[in-house]
Image (cartoon, rainbow, N blue to C red):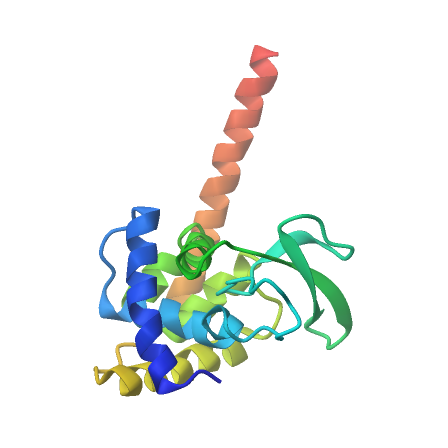
Length: 200
């Protein structure tokens, strides 16, 4: 588990990653949520076994989209499905800590419902949105607890207020928002497909 010093060192790296991705300046809740995920997913890129060289700088346990054997830019590491069964996954390598942090932000901010939940400081809504868009397989409540616990540890390390709670809003409302978003995305895709077929 990262030390308070590592928590403090990770913050400016994460802020630089926000700038690199061209994202608006994050709220404290967004920062703590993103940093909490980086803290327990990849230990700020420092939690991978020493045998994996060069260091992969992977802050979000971001995978390559296929299983071993792994291709260029990826490395093999044991992972588990939600049912506990193990498999050898392929995880991405990044050239620097900032690049690894920026890749995590890309994964978070492109997912329906995740940015809004992060801004609300709602760990359960964040985890629910992440799971519904395929970021992880584990139960959302377990992931949400990890976000909340790590955010509290980060706040203590940096001497700031905890801006992330396990649940701050109406989870049913968040689920409805996610469902509506998926329906709208499906309708847009269907319309595009129809136009493509008409043009063909």
